[in-house]
Image (tube, rainbow, N blue to C red; front, side, top):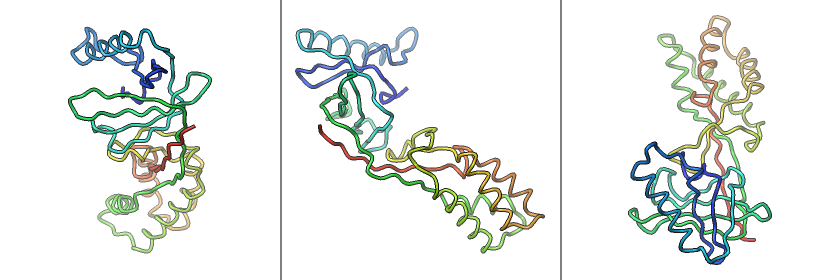
Length: 229
């Protein structure tokens, strides 16, 4: 579990900083060194801020903005949290790799300014070519197929798709499976492109690639803007 999956946080209103609660993190049994340090950091936070105004917060929404790949320890992460009355922007980052990540929060929201769905045309063409090998598909068929995929996907609302996972290399991209209705539309329109003798091979290709780990996976790119309250 990554820190952006955690939902329970403890914040200090006086200092504008917060910490993740250990109850929301997976720890090993018995605790390993990393788990013990995480728990110790939480109790240090409690001791340092015990006389301050403490508040409990939970993650709000699922959006996460990052300036680097999510696996990068130097990535600065921004997401929303709420105390049940107000929404806050949480910003987590560190000055050096060996230092702990510091989380700060202030009233605000994470606004999605643009969403688009991307298809990997090159991989689609290559995958279809490999599927039909040693027979060669005409270039015009490949072009028409890619054009149809783009068209059926263009009618989808990116924000209505169910995200399966985030791209580990590109923090702005999430991956979703193609909805069933869209898949059925694609299948029907492919009948206009491919010969009956080709259609069985094509159907097997589409069926094996229709999910979030296949070549028909939808890559949803979002652009974010932090809006202070």
